[in-house]
Image (cartoon, rainbow, N blue to C red; front, side, top):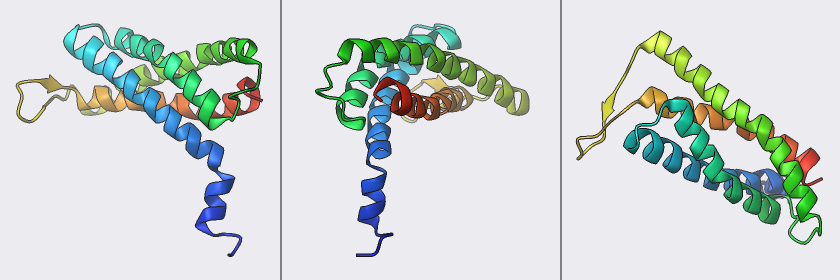
Length: 154
C-alpha cells in the first residue's frame, strides 16, 4: 500500500473524523433545540435560541468527544476534564453566539430579510438565520477541536 492510501489518510485523521461525528451529533441537538424549538415554535429572539441550543448540546458533546474522539474513556481524569471542557465552552459559546449574530447581521445587510416556506407546510423560516446559526457552530467547531485536543483531553 502506498503511504498516501485512503486507509493511511483515515488512520492519521482518526481523531478529527471522530470529533467531526461527535460535533455533528451536537449540531443536530443544537439546531433542533435552538432553531426549531426555541426560535421557530417558542418565538425566542435569535441569540436566546442559539444560546439554549448550545446549552442543550453540551452533555452530548462532552461524552461523545471524551469517549470517541479523544480516547479518554478510561483516563481517570473525568472531573478535571469536565472543568477544562467548561472553560473551553465559555470561549466556544461566545464564538458560536457572536459568530452567528455577526453572520446574521452581515447577510441581512447584504440580502435583506429573506423568508422561505417549508414544503408541504404553512411554516416560514429564514434561510439566512439557519445559515447564520450553522456558521456560528462552524466557527466554534474549529476552536473546539483544537482546544479539546490540546487542552481538555490532552
